[in-house]
Length: 121
Image (spheres, helix red, strand yellow):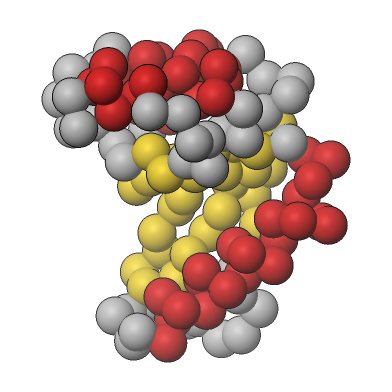
């Protein structure tokens, strides 16, 4: 997992909020960086005293079951964004849900209705 701070302005004294991003690395620069920066900027403009730090995981090369298990145990990760592919989203969601308590929010770009049916939401 790689770490990068967002945004690039002075965030001294702000509470750090870590969000894992599980999307294809090859699409990071041309597609996702701008959207993630906009999200961080909106949070910053809301003036709620937090700065967003993204941790990137390559959806296409990572073992998503292991990634989900690791992220579910990390107390510093507040939520997860991803995956781009429905089958990967399901794998990640099942791994995250194994914890049973304090399941982290998963925000996905996958359009499948399977996950809401499976998880009862």
